[in-house]
Amino acid sequence: MAAIVIPYAPREVFRPFHSRTERFAVGVAHRRCGKTVACINDKIRRAVTSPKEMYRAAYVAPFLKQAKDVAWEHLKRYSRPVWGGPPNESELFVTLLGGQRVRIYGADNADALRGGYFDDVTLDEYADMAPSVWGSIIRPMLADRQGSATFIGTPKGRNSFYEIFERAADDPEWFRFMLRASETGLLAESELKAARQDMTQEQYDQEFECSFDAAILGAYFGKEIAQAEREGRVGQYEVDTAIPVHCAWDLGVGDSTAIWFFQMAGPQIHVIDFYEANGFAIEHYAEVKKRKGYDYGDDYVPHDAKVREFSRSTGAEDGHRARQRVEVMIELGLKPVVVSHHKVDDGINAARRALGRCWFNSNTTGAGLEALRQYRADFDEKTRAFRNAPKHDWTSHTADAFRYLAMAWEEQAKPEQKRDVLAELIKPKTLNDVIREYELEQADD
Image (cartoon, rainbow, N blue to C red; front, side, top):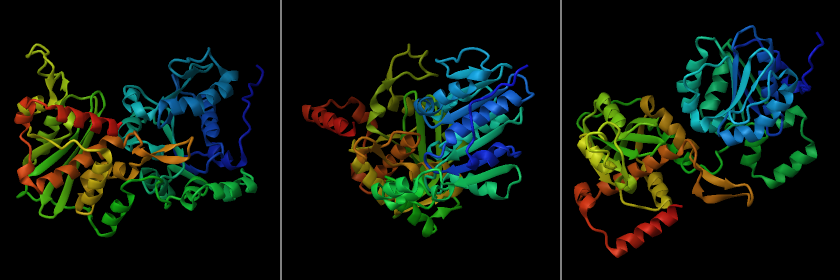
């Protein structure tokens, strides 16, 4: 049988990665060094040489569209000599000669990964993914087959990607590497010089020199959270049982719902817990609250909690009559208070003020804090400038819920302005109310 040649010549800097024997790998790599091509070819080689039956490998990027743009053509090109059939263009997978399968995924719909298994997976630009994608979804999928995993990308501050890179330093099951542009020689010095002129020092250090200490570009709350850490306001704290625990919700519709649990202790805000999930009705979150067992106060919700939706567990009983979510919350024993409708910018500024008073229990709010660190302005590639709006990604629901926490804290300082939810449900709107809501919605868009 003639030898099959895959048209890939690895760059010298990736040869140690390809020859590794460790089960897990993490690599920090500068832009345009060829990391995606290297990882795709690593997938193909491992798949065709594995003795496992029904071998399954995956390449995961932060977004499915992004994964398709950067990896799909590479996967088809390099795997062509070992195709077992034509690529599946709708499901984005290639079946190889021995029945092995390599598939492209996006972490923006990570729950779609559940239910299967992986023998090998690459998480590309892991710093842009929710940490739960690995811990809650992908890691368990490797267990019964003792699958392997690779994390690769450029830094975005000292987040979960940084923690994995640091962990790998002393763990014999891990292989790690860092590829800085100043050391690899893959990019011409003239090009790096031009990049320095076009980028800020922080941008250059992050993208080309793999610096975890460069500020997250466009981050809204980075300085405030760093200050809280310096001042010792992020740590392990006991819940004050003499103070009620309030909740600030961002209610998703067919999307994630995020909840911050907090106490108002005079001038301080004790942020004691955080929870986020995807694809559940309100009843699920009411049960989560019940299990946590705190002595609860109010449930602060955004103005759109007054939109109508079906309730899963009670829909059949009321003839599937669409009801406002605050009605459902009240029936479940929750205490919804509608936060004032506000512009996103105003909410972000309120959050910054609130962060200066917050004490976070690191044991229970770590995932929420990570999202707040990563929450940033959207970047317009055409104008090369940040838009006056947040980037919509996995951090959005967490950050929105924290905005409502901040607005709730400011409103709580003025108890006379606290809203009567039931009265709001039946209160007729004036023309001025309609105009104001329209203007706010346009501003949000």
